[in-house]
Amino acid sequence: MVQLFNSLRPQCLEITLETMLQFQFTEATVTGDHIRENGLVIQFTEINMIGDHIRVNGLAIQFTEATVTGDHIREIGLVIQFTEINMIGDHIRVNDLAIQFTEATVTGDHIRVNGLVIQFTEVTVTGDHIRVNGLVIQFTEVTVTEDHIRVSLVIQFTEVTVTGDHIRDNGLVIKFTEATVTGDRIRDNGLVVHFTEATVTGDHIRDNGLVIQFTEIKVTGDHIRDNGLVIQFTEIKVTGDYISDNGLVIQFTEVTGTGDHISDNG
Image 1: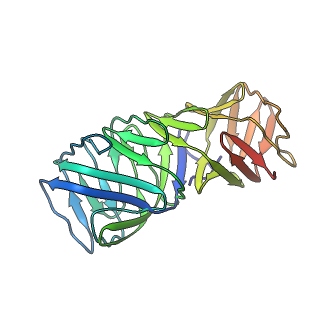
Image 2: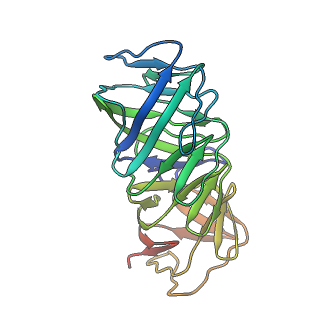
Image 3: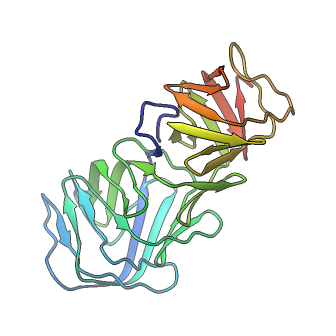
């Protein structure tokens, strides 16, 4: 997951994931380069998928340390299932796993990128990031056994729009169920969100389009104390692990959230 309110680049949101991804392949057809183990290299040029499959033009997956056995990747809860794959163009490299998406459409707690569907249940990520608008997923630690790939990754967002307890980034939707925050990080089953520049309207927090809606907030210290109270922000700028609103500084220490709200120390 990503560290919340870390010194990131402006107009950017980072999310770190640290769980087991499951990329399950059923029918795959590859034209182009090859797969190498011990420096696994799968180079694709074009991907065509049907339904909840992957349809990407310019898909690139880079692995650092990978050992593959079988036809899928598991990452605790995160499941990417493939059925029909035709690839021509970009590639999968072992040395910084990077997946680039161009157009993404998400429904519910699924991520659809030209047919690609990623369903999140319990995800924890650490390492590099995913960028949308040419979405890039970089994996730092990758271990694959036959048909499994185990990695640690970070999702970094550029333009994010959130509704309720969902995060939408060019169709990318991440639904939060239970969130726990420590320091300047927001963790949802390991998911960490880091803010750089935030603008809030009503009971929502917008960070470059990212909107988080709060319902019940309990904070201690120099934090936000709520209890059903709806806090409305107008303009918020975040530095480090603080949120400033017209001089108001909110520092997060330990936050626990359920659904679309965040609780700090209860």
